[in-house]
Length: 423
Length: 176
Image 1 (cartoon, each protein chain N blue to C red):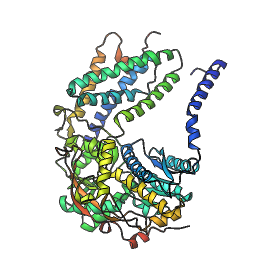
Image 2 (cartoon, each protein chain N blue to C red):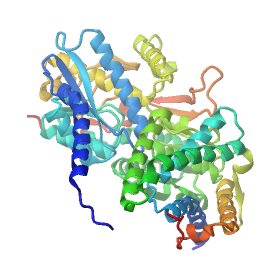
Image 3 (spheres, rainbow over the protein chains, first blue to last red):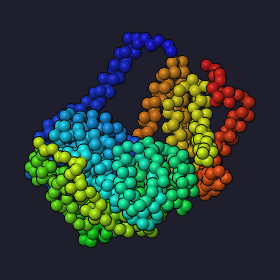
Image 4 (tube, one colour):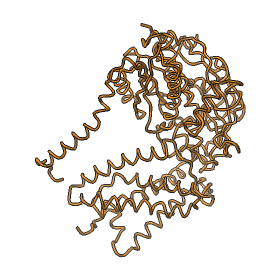
């Protein structure tokens, strides 16, 4: 290696370029420290890069639509406009906490929402609680967020892993058989799903013939899939999500598993199915929300049809379950701030807990006061490879709906693990 | 124990994938002294271009031929304008430059094609799996392993540069 001696000329040139760069960025720095008294900022802490990037984009889009709707009605607390500040946490809980602190301490965000990765949700939930800031977990499913790690300042919109496994496990066992093979992402979300399915298996007498833990971001599932072929299960449960889901199903098709062994799982997302080649679009899955069908949206649900139509017009693809999470989260967060007439976390939390409302699916729902979990149904569906002649995006066939009280743990069971401490 | 043979075979084929990528990287390093951190970006670019060509109606085999050629042209432009001035400097300079390009490229792909994957399948003749006795194996992966063999034969038989020496890391440099 040659020795780098920085000569005077190089130093001056580099310094000049660096200053010019900083000056170009200066207006942005000025803008973000501008007076916050006429604007309320909501911090978005999401995984904009990495395995779950597509989901983060959908959730943010849904959130923006809710924010725009509130601003069009005059904002919150008698005329205060709402804006957002977004940060990328790269699927890393440490970075997510840093970003959360930056959003609150530097950008002066009044509340936080995020994330897709359950480990991130747990980390940000803790950080927000330490700062006494309200945090709504829009897309991280692990039970602990409203279970062992529940916080007065944390709410969760998407279904819990317990709800997902118990909505699907019994039906899948009845439909396909009792020898299950699991491919599980090796972090909080996967472990929670694993525990949920083991509970169902115990209840119906199913056996887990194989359980492979895969690192998040695995691109090659061939070692696991060849084991599955050897084990000959009645059902392959694919628990991985995001890009992992796409790679796993694609390779399952390449290895000839599709058609030979039934495939199913706790959740399937439109973003992932749209990324799959048609031959790999198979299986029977839990569906958290869908953009059409009376069994999901209800009949005459103006809020739902407006949401779907406006989203479609703006983004050219239909809204997904992730878009719904983002929309419901932002909508209720702003409702809570408006209702409490404050950005104080405890006041918002008291307003939100137990408050019944109707939104973009059929029926009345609420964030349960005991654990702050949104109590809403789960649907079950198969996949249509090609969509319909009218709509190439319409790839889900919704066949069943399960009510929240039948699939989530009871308040008494949750109380054993969730000890909420209010200020 | 019966499971060992399919795993070893699978591992060898996976190794073939990495070899296909690594040969290009190694050629560049030995011919030009450039540590090309943007090598993956070029492969990604060729992949997306092939997807775009097939989406526009091109046959898979034409896309397989054309997409890398377009990536090559962009590579030549990059070499002429950005890498060439750095030849007489320490390899760290080209490493930093190509690292920066890879960051820009990643974001550019996300902006153009979105963060979601795009559906891409091999053509019918290469899809599906074939029984090899001890395991069932995807035809497409065997095709890539076959492509590696063809690449190595092609490199061995090019007389002018003794390119396999370069690709396998032995000394060879273009005259400076």
